[in-house]
Image (cartoon, rainbow, N blue to C red; front, side, top):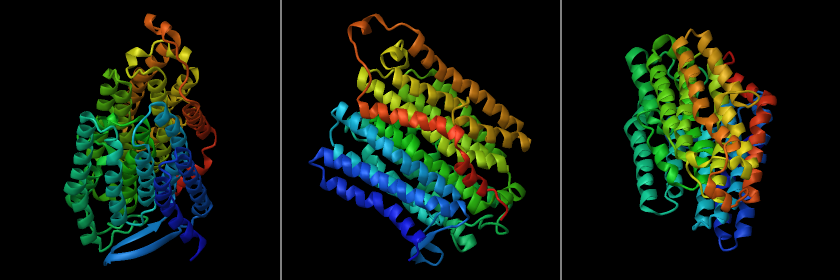
Amino acid sequence: MIAGEALVLAAFALPAVGSVAIALCGRRPQLRETATLATAVLLLWCTLSLLPTVLAGGRPGVRLFELLPGLAIAFSVEPLGMLFALVASALWIVNSLYSIGYMRGNREEHQTRFYVCFALAIAAAIGIAFAANVFTLFVFYELLTLITYPLVTHHGTDKAKAGGRIYLGLLIGTSMLFLLPALVFTWHVAGTTDFTPGGILQGRLSGFALGGLLALYMFGIGKAALMPFHRWLPGAMVAPTPVSALLHAVAVVKAGVFSVLKVIIYVFGTETLATEASTDWLVVVAGFTIVAASVVALKADNLKRRLAYSTISQLSYVLLAAAILAPLSVIGAALHIVTHAVGKITLFFAAGAIYTAAHKTEVSQLDGIGRRMPWTMSAFTIGALSLIGIPPAAGFISKWFIMSGAAAGGHFAALAVLIVSTLLNAAYFLPIVYAAFFRPLPAGDERQPHGEAPLSMVIALMLTSTATLSLFLFSSPLLQLAEQLVAPK
């Protein structure tokens, strides 16, 4: 077995094996958390070891077994999967560090179950990232839904169970009603589900059939939270903040938009879609989702709810960019998976730190909190600037490419949506920053002093906010991977 194949298998197996080690150390918290961090570091090392090969044009992979002709469980590392794997593996480390402070600081129950399920969720995310075909992606996509259900319902309250039912019902429902038929039809038409540069449907479908199949995929990939199948995301905010970070930044929603982009590039092919079917309807639906979710976020007083609807809006940036089908917008879509991840995890880390230290959950309660928690709110400010798209934060880069692609392709309505969305982003983020640093503390707060959250939480959010700035300056490797997606075949 060559080194590349071994690394691919190791990347998938490490978090799965690590989950067993975490479970065995359940009665010794320090050892359990050490096993979590050690596994996360090993996974990042393994993923980074694959990066030079992929940048050089290599596609390491391994085929495990074939269920039916054309339906195999197989892995292959291409540029988009490399980007997603880097996001999942790198952010698992900081999320684990953050989780130690959060779970202890809030005296959460079932901590071992939390760490075990988190590791298994990362294993499923790596399986999605490295899936060589739609069938493998579908298997691990469904596993990710099932594995994260205990995390969403972690608190065991009636509210948590209700959120879990919405989560499971919408994600499994969209998969069974739309995604599974799309998979079967693709296999029937093409005789394979293997991801192929240029698309496996090229010359096989056109017109209404091609457009209908695209709709099945877009609405079947419910984790992308395209309206009207988005309610699972705010409903899942009953989970602990580290789980919210997993849902919004590390694995779940990123698995959704990653799957959308991978299907458009490697199943349909951007050139085939541009010539054989209209994607204008997807531009309209994604554009509506972007603006509508931003308006809801603007009105939301609960901080996590505001962040949840912000995520719904930002996810549709990727769908909108993919639907434009311009090379620059596809590059921007791939980059936005990364830039949104580091910016949004910073914001959720800050929200969790505020809850842990000050027990505040509402935007209206944050007056003056920047004076008590300057590190946390400075990190929040950086994350907010990134999602608005203001340099020198990383979000500017992906938004620049998406807007450039829209302008180059003559999609001026899409460009207008992006501009309006940017203004709405500023409208629901900047008042929080202003209130935190420039408004006085409420009268009662002066008698209830508090400082920053536990040190591990502060370190984690400072790491992600630093990464948000660093990716603006050192984005070359990520840009090289994204450019390979639109390189001549």
